[in-house]
Amino acid sequence: MEISADQKVFVHCIANHRVSCFIGLFGQLKWDWTTQYAQKPIQKTWQPDAVWSDYLEQMRSEYQLEDQ
Image (cartoon, rainbow, N blue to C red; front, side):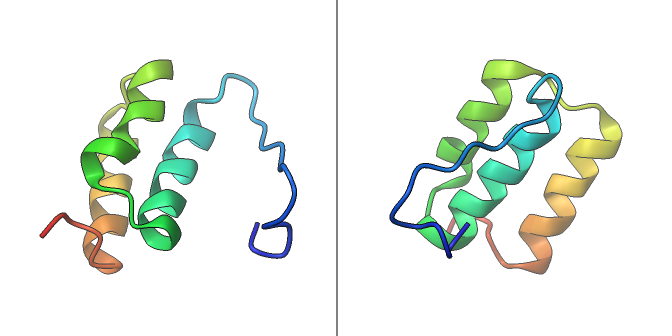
């Protein structure tokens, strides 16, 4: 996505569930989004199950994305 930073990028998944998680994580990693802000696209499309909630928590911890 960084290669196309000056262009619109279409990111797709069948129901946008998983994509919303990756967009939220990317926003936190690259655009300094807060966790609360990153959760907005996720909550707009679904409530992640335990597997995806654990994944989000693990990635936020691994990349130190938790809010200060």
